[in-house]
Length: 339
Ligand SMILES: NC(=O)c1ccc[n+]([C@@H]2O[C@H](COP(=O)([O-])OP(=O)(O)OC[C@H]3O[C@@H](n4cnc5c(N)ncnc54)[C@H](O)[C@@H]3O)[C@@H](O)[C@H]2O)c1
Image (cartoon, rainbow, N blue to C red; front, side, top):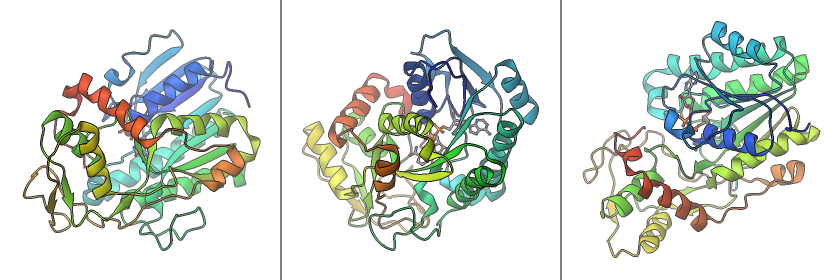
């Protein structure tokens, strides 16, 4: 299917990744692009720079079926890209019901509404959190699914519905398991943003937990949205789940060192070892995640084979773009970190 002229509804379109998807659909000559968002974490600021008459914004929750129905009735929507989610791992741990409601029932609402309205394509943002601790590296799509957090459980459940709606009802669906997505407009809370803020905005050294040997897979946001476009174009993507990462692991220590080098600052990394669930002595707003993963690196060969996708952004170049953005808008990371 070609994106050209298609009307798209993006749930979570006012968020970090969603706002890049808005730009990507507009650049690919979509018809109307409807952002459907409750603005719980998303902001109008994320969409500020987009000046395009094809963009429409509807404030509503994916749990609110009546408002969703209205949004779909206004336009004949051809594509739904579903990103709205409760993605704060700690919220998921503290309030499993809220996490399940938004992530599972919210997704079911999207699938049912898509079926009812004969939507031609539904894309879903799942997460690499569905795997849990790596039993081998890199993690391919056949890896056991043993999520560490309720967030991973709800994403996995939603993702299974997304695929089942294809098998049972013939809905054209594709799901993606993202690595750690970074780039301009990233929200403040995760390790990369904490490091950038300390090094570039506060002139303080990054605080590394343990020895910093944990590995992570960072993927640039523009690479992610390109995969969405390919999945729409390629019929072979239907009913499938794809990992989207860089395929390369970087240790947290390496990440800290790399940022210090980019900043050209001679600051000594601080090593701290708080218990899981406790705050750092050196950076009290930073809590060590319960169920912290040792290694997280995705194998993305399936996406390469089926979609012809591979990440194209060099990590240093992507980081430079994110740093340039936050130096321009430091206020964006002035609040408390999201955890
Ligand atoms: N950022 C990552 O590294 C990453 C990794 C894996 C998966 N994901 C997935 O990608 C998607 C987007 O994540 P993001 O990083 O852009 O986060 P984000 O918080 O910036 O975006 C989420 C958006 O969904 C909206 N939203 C939340 N609950 C809603 C509801 N009930 N109804 C309507 N809108 C609602 C928020 O206001 C926000 O605009 C999520 O589904 C997330 O689980 C993100």
